[in-house]
Structure formats: C-alpha cells, structure tokens
Image (cartoon, rainbow, N blue to C red; front, side, top):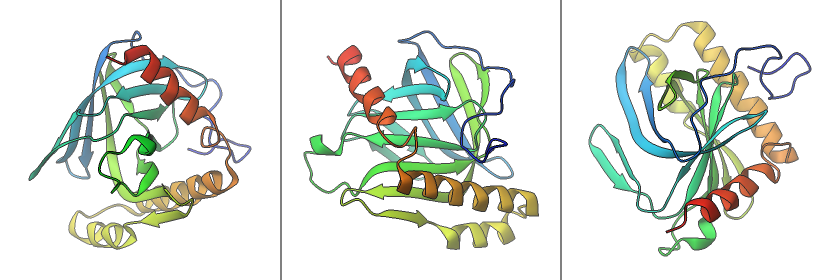
Length: 198
C-alpha cells in the first residue's frame, strides 16, 4: 500500500519477510481470485533492501501457467516489495535476440506478497499492469480484464479499489522516475547479471 506520505515504500514498522540468502532458489506463485492458478516460476534471490526483495531470472528460465509454458528470452529482475501491492520486473531488452520485446518494465498489480518460506513467495494477481515500453511510453493494461473478472470471479469492491489505486500510483512513479523505477531496478539487474552470469 502507499505509505502515509503517498510514496510507494512499505509501511514503517512492518515485519520484514523471511530473508532468502543470495543464490537461494525462490518459487514465485501467483494466483487469481478464488484460487484460480496463474503464473508459477523459479527465480534466484539476489538482494534485499529497504524497498523489498530482488529476484533474478536468467534468460531461458521457464514460466508456466494454465495453457502456457514459455522460456524467457532476456535476463530480468523482479522486485517483490515488503508491503506494497505490486511486483515489478525489469527486463534487459537491449539483449533481446528476437528484437520483438515491447516492455522494458512490467509491473503487475497484486495483493501484497506473502512469504510462505524463504524459498516461496505468493500473491494474488489483480489484472491491471503498468508497463514502460522500449520507446519510453508508460501504459496501463488490462482494465477490460479487471472489469470482466470483477463479474466472473466476484471481486469485492475493496480489491478493485486496491488494484486501481495501485496502478495509478505506480504509473505516476514510473513517469516521474521515482525509485525504485528510476535507476535502482536497472542497477539491481546489472548486479545480478554480474553475480549469476554463467
């Protein structure tokens, strides 16, 4: 949630999640409302700071959801905030061999992540996404999906409000290049590439 001063940093005094040691394999499991399965994949714990936990995925990592099984084409790093309701993935699009990737940054609106164990983090996907395109545009995606799922899954009003408010706050922060959407994410990505490159 946004902090009392309107920023995106976690609530002061909140309990930190269990800390995975750098190099720990961390499973990220995302579901839809009502327990419907969504994305599952493995990442590598890189670092933990005042913003959250940073999880690295090298190119070629496997991501699975119902009816989809894909391999990533570039390195990326995902920020799992301590308490804020999103996860943000920074992509090394400059290394895209296909030249088809559209997004440098992809931010999924979620419920605040829950660390079930140091090697397992879970969250509820709330449909809305904020992206930074390769040509510098900031866009909010999947408003139609949120509207549809509000009806088909029976989203409570407070969940819809959370998704919409989070998307607004994140989009504003990305446009203004407020951290962690300024230099921090890209710095963490370069660090992880250096630490885990094969």
